[in-house]
Image 1 (cartoon, rainbow, N blue to C red):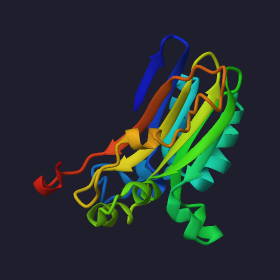
Image 2: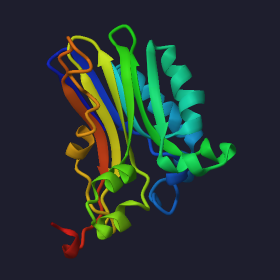
Image 3: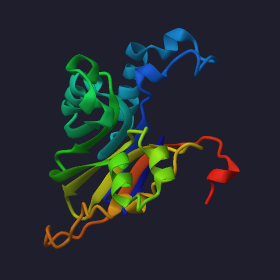
Length: 214
């Protein structure tokens, strides 16, 4: 978890909540089964979020159903509103299955911020647009459905994004600079706003093979 302040204006909390389907005994054999249960973990996660009481909360691996039926209603009681997007695979799934897809969420304190604009970046689509004939890169990226979620909030000076991505020997890297090239924050289209960019996210590290480094 990353918790930091920016210029004393607002505080930001970044938290990977670990989607229920990823919290398996195979992955976390050192942890007792009862402690991996979502009904147990979600209470502790919410308590920690409330303890830090950040102005902006960036969450990764949030299950769609849990965003709408747990995090959003609970945090609205605390003066927040939020946006969410599931990973790209949700578009191809039946409605009943879609609710179990995880994604990114951004919550903001409504007393300090108003939402001007939100933007979803699908990294596989971004790769297609910037592949420039690199079939190898497309073969690595297309099977993934990682996303970035961005929010432009009106306050003194603020704009940030929330991204989750995985590094893998079978996946080429998509630098966040490519995400910014989407011109989500276009100062010409949003006059009179001086925007600063804060990146809040996580990267899953995996062992790299020498042939994949460049």
